[in-house]
Image (cartoon, rainbow, N blue to C red; front, side, top):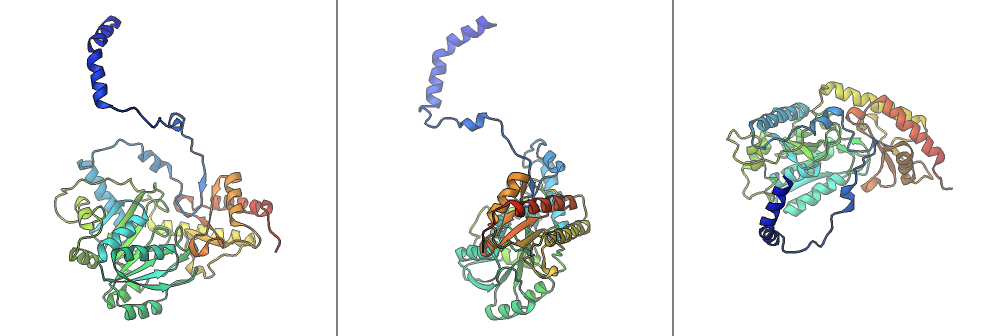
Length: 409
């Protein structure tokens, strides 16, 4: 055997050298990174920030299943089942319900790219960075953006929205159901009952962000008259980041299909996406990029809402027991998935966050946008919303407040 290999090598030597010169005519300028030859180390941490949340074993196991071709019949069946899951968790019968390969930002862009055309009037509720980014995206499209602005901790009332609708006559209104991770960071739950009906009386569509609230707080897309609803996979749904869920009412679909101009993005063109998700009653003719699977929990919605409400109420009591002040005063307006507390006087929030991470392997977060430096955020999402985790983070906070430096006022 060895002799045969040596003979073959001698016979093919010159020919092989020619192949190498043809295929690689230049030497490598960049060496392989040394890190790639080392084992990957991922620490075990309890993620109690504004997202992502820890993955349950069922989801991690799903990530190790065999890969299928994206046009296989089994994949189409999985996509249909995902659509049914989205309709359930959104509480909608909209046929145009699908998942997008991309974060919540991607879903926001998909909604605005498809619903707005240059010159359209767009009313946006700005109570944090989510509203600011919706405004930024719409301005890039060429829409006429009109703002309703609230300080951190505030929400938009029906009267305020009605006055703005009458004044600006928008085709679309944006509201965030739960401003959290990259929003105002204050954990406010925006009421939604009556807002869809109000918008429709003014010939306006209602677009709602539920990235931080879906599964943790009640939302009823059809019954609340929401025309476009989107969320992300990495919070209460306990799935890996990188997938967003979105649904369009018939009113929203009709506006999209009656556009005078093409959407500014091909990748996020809803008519294109609708086809390979089987939402348009036509054969799938385009090749989809299959998003990572979402864990639409075996737990029912009502049980999930109750779990998050009870866990957050227990957390609020524990935080107040430490002498901490909840940022959102009105209990009815507190987002069950994200709790914000005022940074105690004399402390640097970064010291507290770092101490808890370094000594307890627990992630919590500071504020962003208007609330930067003012609040600490604690997330209880999906399987992380337990009394045990509340006790763990409470002990860690108590220790951090005892040991972190405190400036003299």
